[in-house]
Every structure is written in structure tokens, then in C-alpha cells.
Image (cartoon, rainbow, N blue to C red):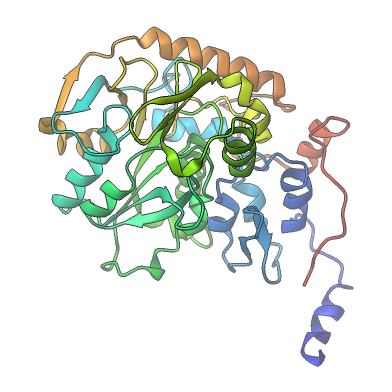
Length: 399
């Protein structure tokens, strides 16, 4: 096409020094099977050149400008993710030791049960309270796909009813940060959005909000509250729900009422609450995202609030309040909760220690929370060269 002649000519121009392109991120992270499907690269791209492919992975959808931001904010690429912990935790050491910065911690559950909630129902109750009080205009959550059973998809809930519809957990990533262009929604000017996500998603948000420049990566400015779900790994939907659960274990997904990971076990129950199977989570490691092995952030150190089941009795949530924003949000729901001191903080410390050992054994670069936020591309290549996580050579799609 004649209109594309200029692009052909541009491809012969020598690149400016220091520019990084999407296909370099693609080679070092996506093709190397290290992508954790957080969507940070999509959110960071100022030209909307990155979208979501049919395989659920980031994909170049129009010409890359070489701004380097997709690389800078990828937690398996240029973002030294552990450096984001100090954004919430401060520089006094509290941000990286044990549970990190924690102003208050509780074992909690809602006084009035919400149908479908996981554990103590804290997250749903919190978001409903904030929406009812007008403190937020929406919450970016996961809800079940309309076409694929037990597949979570990113969804912006703007009413308490929609929050209730999203109650429960899904164990696949949704590329949540690929859905933070809130201009596509019917929201008031300068909306205030809460995000519930995995620690890697929260790290990407915090890093973009802390960027020292005013252009690019601005889609996250509407996010005023971050809630991290305690997480050791996420799973590939097809490998976990279809291959492992449906096919290998002969489970009808239409008959599944709950999928949960508790005390190191994968538990699947039917619509009546009867357990279909309960097996060690290690039996499902082949379905996990390989990039999760490099993450030492089980606790969600960069978030305003961290929530999970570890450290509390069955039917309760462990709640870690890390920031002033987290404390203020918690006050809106405090009266709706049964609260007591955290049941077993040592259980959190134990799993955190195990998670860090796995991560430090998988991470090929130095783990250094005091290092600069961003990692040079050449330094990354040197660290990963010759390993099973080395960049994969391929022909770049330059459009």
C-alpha cells in the first residue's frame, strides 16, 4: 500500500541510542515464557500500540514508537519489582522485612454473609462500603467469562450489585492493567478507582504512579486504592481448568461451585458444596505461569491493603493495612466486620520465606530492594543469557 511507503523508509533509519521496542520485550519476556499477564506493558504504552492477542498475551497491534515504557514497567523486564515496595513501605527497612510495612493487621469476616465470597468476604464488603459512601466510583475486579466456565475476566464494577456478582476467586490472570483506560466507561470526571489484583499488578501500578515524568503511563492516575491478594503463583486457564481439572480429573465445570487454594491444597467443590477433590497444590505446578517463580512478593508489599486466607482460620480473611489510604478505606467497613488480632502471623512469615527462596533461586539477576527502579536492557540480557529464561530470537513485527 502506498500509504505505508514512509514506514518502509523509516525502517532503514538508524535508531536513536537507548530506544527499546516492544519486540525486545516480546523476545525477553513473552516468547521466553516469563510473562505473568499483568498487563503493565499495555497500560504503560502512550500510543496504545499494545493490545491483547487471541492467546491472552500482550501483542503489538499498531506501530511501536520505541518509547521504552513497556520494558520499563514490566515486572519480568525492566522493572526491578522489589524496589516498588519502598513506595508504600518507606525507606526505613519496614518495606522489605517479613510482612513489610503493616500499620494494622486483623483476622476478619463480614457480619452479614455475602453470597459467593471467598474466605471472610472482606474485599467485597470493603468495596461495597466504599461505593455506598461515594468514596470510589468503581473497582477493577475479575468476574467469570460469559462463554468460558471458571475463567476470570477483568471487569469494572460500579455498583454494589456488580461487586457481589464478582464475589469469589479465579486463578488465572486477566491482564487487568490492560483494562485501565477508564475513559471507555461511563464515569464522572476525575474518577476514583480501586484495583484488586495480584502483587505484580499492584507493583506495576505503583511504579507508573511514581514515574518522574508527566507523559505516558498516565492511565493509572485514576487508581486511588490498591488491594493485593496474597499470591504465590497464578495459572494458565487452559492448563489448569481445562487440562488438569476437566480432562485429567473428569470434572464437569458446569457442576463446579467453588475452586480454592487453602493450606497448600487445591480444593474443588460442586454446586452443593460437596468436595469433588482435594489435592496438594504441587500437583498443579505444571499449569502455573513460569514467570511467577521469579516473584518474591507473596505479601503484596506495594499495596495499600493485602488480603488472603493464610494466617487466619477457615472462613476468615487475613487483612494487612499498609498505608494511610488503606487505613482510611478500612474505616468505612470496620463496623460491618468481626475483627480480632491476626490468628497466625507466623504462617504468613513461613509461606513468605518459602516463596522468597523459590524466587531467589529462579531470579537470574540480583535481588536488591535498594537498587534503582529500572533495569537496563543490556544488563538484563547479560543476566539471563545461557539460561532457560534467555530471550528468544525471532523476526520483529514492525508494522
